Length: 77
Image (cartoon, rainbow, N blue to C red; front, top):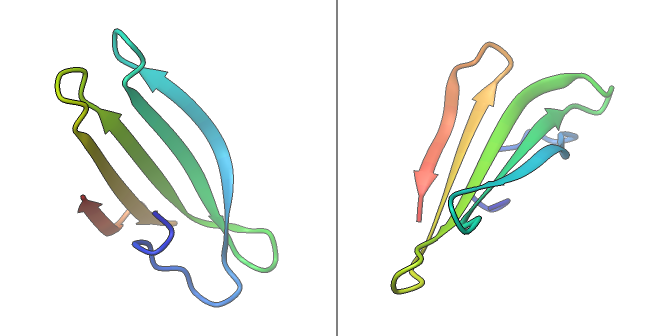
């Protein structure tokens, strides 16, 4: 996941929350804040990891937004 997002020098990820959803908790959703070197939140990242119940096919996605809410990265694999 970290290789797919764009962080400026000095920016780091800070996990804000994690939750599971689905009848068998087959989807994990992590929310991160992008924090600059001064500790200010400058963006957000949502990472979704889904494992299909039938066939165990795994799909992941990442959506990165800047401080204004504009989508910077939106990829699935």
